[in-house]
Length: 472
Image (cartoon, rainbow, N blue to C red; front, side, top):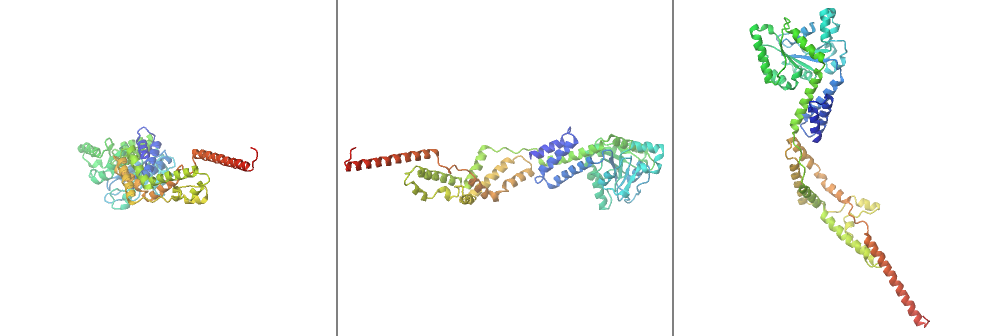
């Protein structure tokens, strides 16, 4: 969880460079995988991949997309900006089935267009057109150098493929230009589906109210003000709104100037990616929450240790160690001539397969002890204790993390018996060697026995000499 929080904070750092924010989001995605909602994590991972790919592509080009509904004049606006009739114009039905791209400048944009998924037959280079030699065209070409202008399919088309194409390209463009119609600029589908969800990208968005020539001159300002009011309700405060007429050319110079300024600033790409990263990080942070896991108290830890010790048979092992130590101490300190008889007595630790010798047979036997397995009462005590500690540690966390903690805490219950047995068999019980004091007692016993035998032998010699009446 700490990795996710740290990554999200790095991705949301307003003064952090874009590359570092992308790295932070990638770290958050890695920590959230398998814990937060998969759909949310997949979307954030897609942002990381898309942002990284866009940064690796041309930084000299700015992708500007014209989007709008059927009859809004989107394709007409595209032709007016390009100065050429490149897109088919229609009024009553969708005429744009595929996105069309027009590129300004001499820099090669083929790799960028390939990434955008624009087929070669739908690509046009503005500098290669025949009218590029006029002075006005050359000036316009220089002002918009680096512009990649896209004419998207109609977002309200009856063709599902058109919807998918618009949604795909909207995620890839650097600057969005929404072309609205005076009769349908308040369409709820447009605002709820596209404009409101993209409030985080308001810095890279323009709104064009086309067909302004069809509105009475006295009502134009009021209509533009109403469009701004609706945008503010969508969270798009400050988004420029330009009234244009692709048919008469009214407002086109202002639109061309605003787009040219955005293109020359070379900042739209990074602003768009910053918005994507921030949006994804905000979503992960909201789902993750800002709670921190609690530290377990010593009393709770002791309760868990006691439950596991009971399930592992530690009291039985402790008693076996005590009895084995007594048996081995008696064996080491008993009468030297008869102490070997105690070897026929069973060793408590060896009976439990806890006496690890140096032979291969002893090592194989130690792989599994003979300590009785935990009964149902002991297992239930462990499970209850673990769940209580889980609830204590996860208190105050968001629901996905509570679920993740619970899943992790109970995921190894099936391996609990083997794990406890391995813990017991791998623990040095300190009963394998003979204590030093026992060895000292044994040495003293042998010295005393040797002295007794020497004395007995000397007494025997004296008795023989007396019997033979030899002089002492």
